[in-house]
Length: 234
Ligand SMILES: C[S@@+](CC[C@H](N)C(=O)[O-])C[C@H]1O[C@@H](n2cnc3c(N)ncnc32)[C@H](O)[C@@H]1O
Image 1 (cartoon, helix red, strand yellow):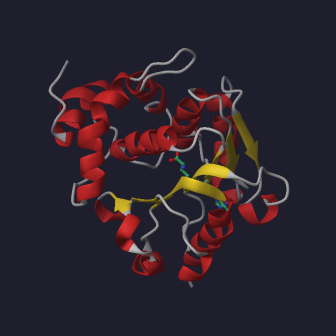
Image 2 (cartoon, protein in one colour; image 1 turned 90 degrees about the vertical axis):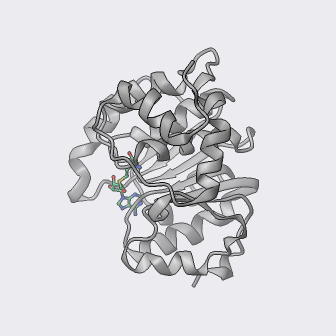
């Protein structure tokens, strides 16, 4: 087994040879994100329950799919999905071709949970819908709705252990996705937001209470453990 103490080595010596150079290599400026990967990488990389892939096997699958997260983010996504309370489903906002959906679904399989994935596939991304269907075909625990959360509330389950927001990245949409999904997260659940710092979305970071913020460089992924009063983001 490769020495996995240093997260850069995890990527470079363990994951990189498997996935080649297709993934962008993010920097490491956030202590919490780095610490989690350092402490949990061995465990994450060796998990292998019946009926689900371990993370390295999973990488072979997601490496073939057009996704928009960097490798470290998929690893953290997997970790937070595994760590989230096991009695509730996972909600994804923004599926594209299904790379992040599969990462979530594999983690969810381990505790027999579903992933509810929302994507209205506007014209700009409609070409990904068939790819999503093909890529996720073997996962009976993925349920996709072609709606944004505004239209899906009332149809989808009301409680989630983990919400991953990676939909329309303009400020109003991120704010609305955030506000509508936070009340659906159960106690001790998690929320992660990808690329939430784009443009005006910097404002979101400045309005989050940093005490339970965990992120990677550039704020690619922000994760909160506690429920955030909706009034905190304006
Ligand atoms: C950045 S991509 C998602 C990438 C995916 N999470 C991954 O890592 O593989 C953004 C997706 O959000 C979708 N989208 C656009 N508006 C949306 C909305 N209101 N609600 C949910 N998804 C939306 C787009 O169709 C697109 O597929």
